[in-house]
Image (cartoon, rainbow, N blue to C red; front, side):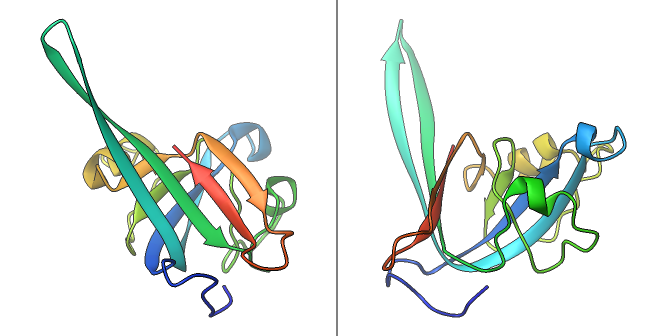
Length: 144
């Protein structure tokens, strides 16, 4: 990833776990991780009460500066060597910080295990916006 900051608030390192769908990987789901620097990570927690029960829910936003290392999923999934590249798709995972966990589907190494291990600083990607075309402040926005 290019070494520049588009905004001084982009000071976080994250690890993104990109999921390769089983349909695109000989019938077996796969995962590739990449550490990204100079990102903006934010979680807002809202507490609600219903029938005497309290619920806390987080809304996550990750902004990743536009990068030549980014590949659209359809291009990224076909790369033989994914090192140094990343994509963004619904179902991917994001963890705040540089972590080296492996997701391979075995007990203790499932996507759900990684999410639980790093909560509340981890989320499953539910939305993506490609805002990289802007001449200043271009970025990818992931939400969860």
